[in-house]
Amino acid sequence: MFKIKAYGKSEFAWMMLPVMRDPSAAQDKLLRWIKKDPRFHRRLLRLSTTKDDNNYSPAVHRCLQRS
Image 1 (cartoon, rainbow, N blue to C red):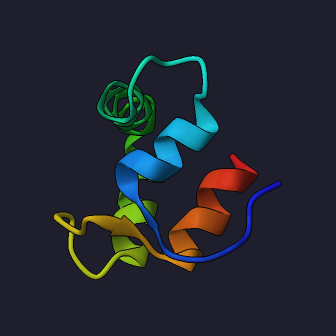
Image 2: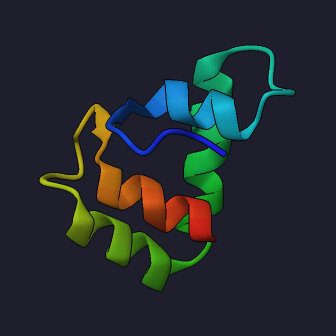
């Protein structure tokens, strides 16, 4: 599907949701989807260095692709 590497959050979201008109809208939609499941959201936060990271690490990327 995608090469496993660190992606910017909006870049990754736009790849996951290519029908969205722009990357920031895709990022907002992906974040809303993630936050619907608090356990999944906490798991992603544990994989990140901080909740304010601008990139998704390869570990977070793999977790999102499996969902």
